[in-house]
Image 1 (spheres, one colour):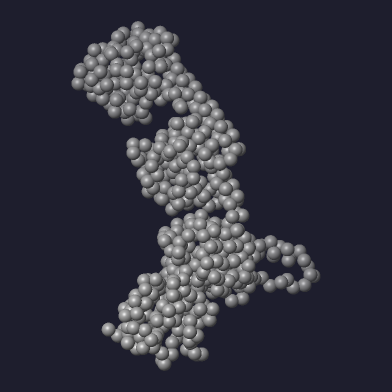
Image 2: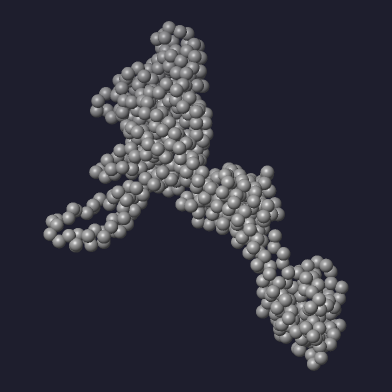
Length: 602
């Protein structure tokens, strides 16, 4: 800790022979002296910066009590630590005048005397020598702290560095991930509950690596610094007020912690590859068994019963063209100079004019990989992959590994050019995906598929990809609601997609006891236009049995028979199950022969 120069330290020096003129309270003697200066002005306060030992011979000092009080008040309001009066032969005063002593005591301003044999320059040198010694000591402490931190960084983990920092500076420290979740702390428990620092953490996280922030909570100073090299990897929370020596080490601490988080990011790459490959394996199967799909998700910690697909464009078309244009212009001068040296070598190859280059593809792929890694961190289970990004639209990579196969979302591509990379993810239904996208993919076109059973997540991803154009136009993520799902699937018109949609809607019934009976009863009721008696006659069961079965089916699916959109979705799903696919030329819409029911029979 820093040891500043106090007024009592100067009084204790025998070579200066300074004296107090009245019984100065101990807390006033503990004032810090920042500098020493001389002035005989009647109003020196405006020239002071604070913490000065102000010396004067009192050449213009007034002796009237009121004038003395005004003079002392001006000095005190200027921030002076104390006032010193020079005494001696040939000087205005041989002892401190009573009006000045009284005014100083009333104002709480220490008043010292400097004897004749001690020149003001000696006091000035003593103050500045002490300050220089203090600064050298602070520099040595900073170097020592930096060495301790570097030694701790040579080990493993964040906690050794944080513990060394706290031991050396007395300032609490904790590292959190970009979502504000605690990763490590220098002490067993953070000094400030994280809830009190939440607003500050969120404010810095929203700005990425662009700046830090500080505030006060619970009577303690809080400071948050972003951590990371190219992207935000974490947040450093400091609790307490660092002295000058500690403050000079903060940049070094930030660098070492950032390096450790970057190392962690690289160490986690194999796990990201594994999870990405697992997602590719799940999406490669058109009709995965319900138990297998659920087991695959459970193996990575995604334990929710229902999931949804999310598709995000990593780089917009405008961004890609801007990056490509910059790269092309950079090479243009070099290519022109190269061609000018090839006299007689024949016509040169035409320059690319579509705005897409290998450099822009690499840049887009890098941006996609970074975004995928961020999203994998924020999403429980971390099932994320990157698809696209190579000429011709072939699958290029994942959040750290190859995908293989065709993108599940199959987003629209630029004809004749490279595919724009997209990030595909599978998340639990309880995740606030809009908040995650706002933080890690701000401004990026994104589609959010409907909630489905795990075995039908491929369908959810397909619908999410179909919403990318809507998201580009609206400027915000577009979400497929259940009431819109059937219309999206009808427009897509793909047999496998329609079958997957039926699995999504009727999946809960497939897993239930006597599920076939429930589906058959539901299909019969829908095909009879909601007629209870006709349904019971067709199935050969009592009317009350029909009601009981449909009540159970609605409880399992979360649908309502009195909701027209829900009835339409259920009708389409049961129609697909019994092979009633749309007739050619109807774009997947139901025929007039068997319209969905509009109002159930009472």
